[in-house]
Image 1 (spheres, rainbow, N blue to C red):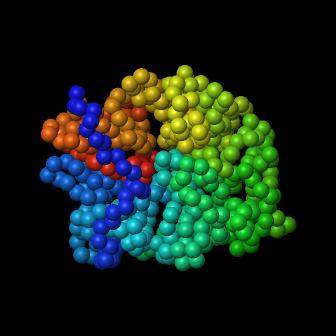
Image 2: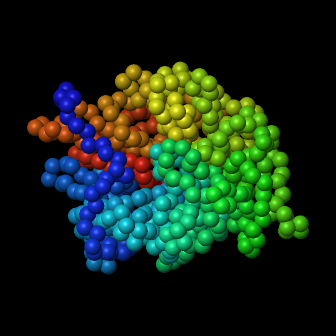
Image 3: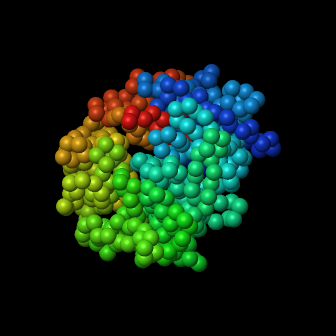
Length: 462
C-alpha cells in the first residue's frame, strides 16, 4: 500500500485561476476525431512521457483513453488544442449532438461555441454570442431531453446567457448544413446556474409543433407565459414545473394535479386538461427537481426524500402510471450514510448520485468499502437489484447507455495511480459494467485533474 501522504490532484476545473496565453484567437473548429469512442471529457494527462495540459480525451469500450484530434483549416490535429491549457465546457444536447465551448482562455473558448455531431465529429458554429448553458451532470446527468427540449421540426430549446443583450434567455437552436441558427424566445429570471440550490431544472417545455411554456422574467421576479408557433405570447397561471412528454405535448404540475397544456386557436387561450390527481407532490420543489426520462418505456419520473432519508420515486408520465410513489429505505439502497452525507442531509437526493439510462434508474450507494449501483428496472416491474465494485476513491461516475458507465478512480496500491518515487497520485479512467460492477483493465492513461462534470456520452445504442 502506498503512503497515504501522497496528494490527489483533484481541483475542480472551475477553481482554476491560471489561464494560458489568450492573445491569439483560437482557430475555428471544423471537426473532432471521435472515432471508436463512447465517452468524451476534458482533462490533462499525467502519464509519464505523454503529459499534456488540459485537452480533449476520449475513451473506448475497453477503457483505453486517447487524446482527441481537433481539425481546423490549419491542421487535422491543431496543436492549439493540446499545447496550452484548454478551457472547455461540454454539454449533452441529444443522441445526435453535444455542445462544445473550446478555447485557450475562459473568454476565447466562446469563439468555438458549436454543436458537434456525435457520429461524424463535424462542428456547427452557433450563430450568436451565447454562453453559460445549463446543465452539468453533477446536478443533472439524465437524458438531455429536458435540458435541451426538442420540437417536431428538430429544433432545440434551452436556457442560455446572451452576451449581446446581457440577459438570460430561452433560446431556440436550429442546425443547418453550415451552422446553428439561434432565436430568442424570451428572457428568463437570472439565477446562478450549476449551483447547489435553486437550479431551475423544469422552467420550460416545448411541444411537437413548437409551442413553448416557460417561466419568464418579470422585473426581479418571474411570470409564466405561453408562446405559440406564430409568436403570440399569452400569460398563463403559475406552475410548479413543466416538462415535455414522449407524445410531444407539454405537461405541468400545479396544486396537486398533473395537467396537459395546449393552445386553443379558436379561443386564443391555453387550455389546461387534467391528466391525473397526484397530491403526493404537493409540497415538493418540482421546479428544482431532477427529472428522469426513460426512453425504452417512455416514462418520466421525479423523486423526493423521505423523513428518514428514504428515496421516494414518483411517476409523472407514461402508461400504467404508479398510483402511489415507490419508497426505498436507506437499507434498500445501501445509503446508511445518508444522514451524515453533506449533500443528502442538506438537499436530499435532489443533487446526489441519481441517474438513468434507456430503461433503468440508478442510485449510488456505499456498502462498507464497496461502491453500490442500485438499479431500478422499469421494464421489470420496477425491480431493484445491486451491483458492487471496489475502488479506493471514486471521483465521479457518469452513466452512459447499454449498461455502461465511466468512472474516474484511484487506488493507492496501484503503481499506475501512484508511480514509485512520485509524491502525487493521479486518477484512472475506466468503463464500468453496470450489471456486474466490473471495471475494464486499468489503462496506462492517468489524469491529475479532469472535468468530471461534463462527460459526454458519445455512443447511442438506439
